[in-house]
Structure formats: C-alpha cells, structure tokens
Length: 325
Image (cartoon, rainbow, N blue to C red; front, side, top):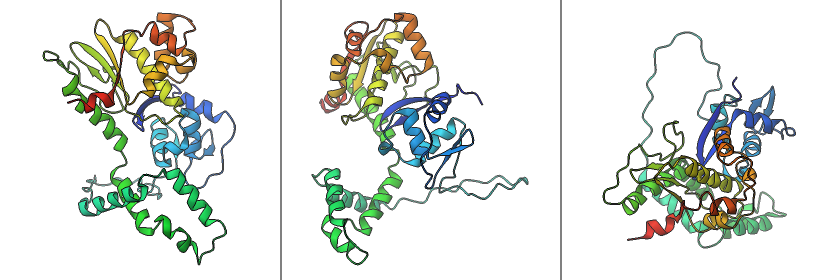
C-alpha cells in the first residue's frame, strides 16, 4: 500500500488534508483504547476510529462521529468495521445480476419540521453544556424508577431523541452545504461588472489538481473558510495558514482574497506568534516544499508572514459580505 496516499475532505466547514503516512505515524504513538463497537485495522491492531482519527488530524473527537472517521480512513486504504447500512455477511463469490439502487424513501417534511422545532425549543438560549451538567447532577443517585422524574424538567424525552436522530439523518452534510452556500451567495456581492469565473469553482471537498482555489476569476483568486471558531481551533488555524500560503504561492498576477467567518480568524493571522513551521506541520508535503522553495528556512511567525509576504492578501469577513445589501 502506498503510504503517500492522501485525501482532502471537509469537516465542520473546514478543509483538511490527511495522508496514510500520518495515520500510520499516529498509530505508532501509543496504543489503542478499548474497542466498544467500531474499529479500524492498522498493522494487525484494531483501533477505535475516533481515537485514531483524532490523533492523526488533531481534530477533537467531539467534533465528529465514528461513521465519518471510518469513511475517511477507508479512503486511505484501511480496513474497518462495517457501517450500520452494510451487511456483515461475506460476499457471495458467484456472479450476480447487477442490482439497481432503490431510490431513497421520501422525506416526511411535516415530521422533519416538527423535529427541528422541538430541537430549537430544547436548546433555547442556554448553552448545551450547562444543560448537560444540570442533567448529570439530577441523575446522581437515581435508579430506574425515578430517572424519568428527575430529567422531566429538562425535556430529555424519547421524543427529543427521535427528533434529534431524524434531523441528523437529513442534515448529516450540513457543514458541506454551509460551505457551498456561503460561496454561492457571496458571488453576486463580490463579483465586479466585467468579472468572469474562469474555472469551475470548488464548493466542497475533493478538488482535482487543476483547481488550486475555491474561486478563480478573471481578476482574483479566493479561498473560503466557513468554519465557526470556538476557542480551541488548532486545526482551523493550520488550515487557515495553509490557504493563506497557497494564495501567496499560486496567485500569479491576480489579486488574492481569503474569506473567513467572523473576526477571530483575521485576528489570529494578524497577531499570532505561532511559527509557520508549526502552522504548516500538518499540511501536504507539496505545500511545505513549495513554501520552502520560495522562502527557504525563514523562521516567520504567522503574524510576520501575514504582514510580509501575504500583506496584500485581503482578509475579509464573510459575515459582513453576506449581510450587505
């Protein structure tokens, strides 16, 4: 298996690059936690997919589910446990007639809307973490006879669980949708009268090598970062710097723009004393080589790079663009 195999994907609105070599290196740092249900096999050892994926990407496991980790690790050639919709029965080697994929069941719009409304009412204006802490306190000392009574005031019912499962079923790719929709809705507000899109834009993961940027026009190249920063954003910071470097290296004679969501990413680029070596530590080998070819071993901080080589890359808050008339 080629250890240089690599994939690009979108997670929580942020683009990531992950290689098979990174996963193998992650597996070499300590052992696996106990397997509860799903697993991924690396060098004859089985790992919980979320543990290994977290270690390889640096993304906290609270940010994704096992199914997402399994899908991406499979793309890198690793064997995994089957997903719920897959049969665990070994395939029959005898030739079979080709099967047609049945159409997905119709969406019950009324149920979906009702479920979404129920979730909104549950969340209300209070942070979910506070609700969970209160539930934990209420459950201490409970037994099977009084569990429901203790949590009734918090609305944690069977109906709420079913509502959450239904919404997740139909909104599993909501982050990909947000990324695509933000680009599409920004275009009428940023394109100039005589400006034309000259290459198929990249609205989701899986770019081919011919598309270096999310947007290429006759006047500009641009990258879009639609992730909402939460305070612990190491991978988002690295991805942001990687896109900034890519714009500097590949812009040619066109102007370059980096669109982000909110002011935190912009403040990070303008104030961070993190080293560029750290920021590019999980980027693709190709990008790191291109950076070293242009800038050598210069020990820039992120702030120095943004103020120097990237000084004329425009940093733009998407929230401001999208609310503009």
